[in-house]
Length: 519
Image 1 (cartoon, rainbow, N blue to C red):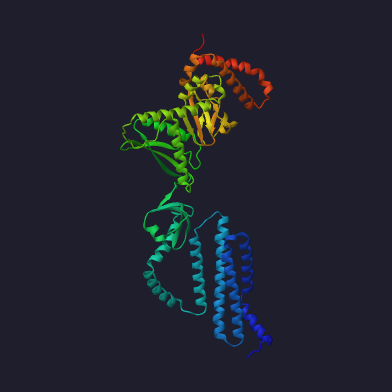
Image 2 (cartoon, helix red, strand yellow):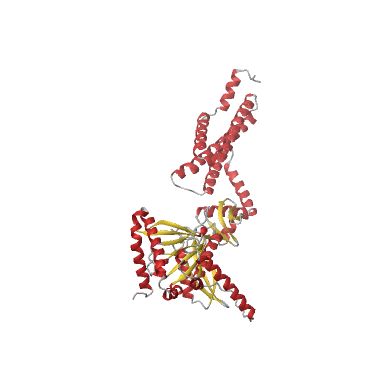
């Protein structure tokens, strides 16, 4: 028996541990580990496992050397071969991490994760067969035996193998990628992982559905929003009903114009949203808005925003969404109730008109006539309330919300002012009402806006019956126009004060001409 203090014992121990190439192997593993720790943070978990396994193999080498020195040569040889096998596996895994996690991404190549696993496993098998051949085992008998075992396992594990092969096929043929939105039967969600056995799909309901890969290979699935050489967007349908009394062309025109002029988050500009008449229902015509969704995670919220714009556009046009028709026999109390409700509405409108500077010269009876002619007109956020250059013979009285006045020049928009009804009603579009001039600026709703619209036909009778009021109206309009000019040019008010009188005279002349009051 050799003593542990014997120099020959230590020499034998070192010779057994330091097999040929051991020093180079340690250096290579150390360099690769440090490099991966710095460059590939996502591989740190696998890296630490490999380093622990390598340390265990070194410990096994030391133990085998002790056994060899103490005379247990059979056990020492087996333990040493096991340690060398593990060292090779660690080196193969580190090489795989360097190749698939650093080098190929640097070359802008993104092979599927299953390909990395297959390559590493194939290298493991080749290394294991090499070591078995090195120790003198007959590989032909092993291959024959393994073929029988493989056939038995393949027969008993058909579903598992089908899932594995399905996962390989899904990644290699690029039919499904992580991040895709798919629909499988009643499951609709985003692919977050494609593994050996299954594919994980996260739904919008905060659920994760595990789908066996073999099921995806056997049946059809739909990849949402994907078209070759096109951005990711998915067509959605928003349905609504309108009575047959409204011409379909009118409904389609109103809805499409509102959607084309609005900026709705998540709605693609190309292809543009469109409205189509889809069916003749029992008592209503059935319409659909078709738009392309750019953020597939927000389908219902975007549908809701589109419905809001459709609803407000129909209200502005005086078109009511259809409801089931019923025939009722009304008594006189019904007429009285309607009259009372109408009276309350007129009083509310009068309260608004009393606060509008433009109408301060009108009598109470004249204000009541104006109130009768007002039309309730709502807007959704982002709606273009009036377009610069458009001809529209009406004004808006803002009673709720905020609207921004924008000046368009050379294809760009510049903000001039923000109208806010928080401190009382405001108005715009007066030049179109009293002179017929095209709109001088664009006005966009910046919140949910409620307005009253006053048309020329509702105001003309008052002007015709008492023409003197046009002078007061022209003074108010001239002052507002001068204020807008100052805001547009960013000049001092004193510079333009002499111009107000000239502006007033010009506006007065246009009003008289527009309403036919000239002699």
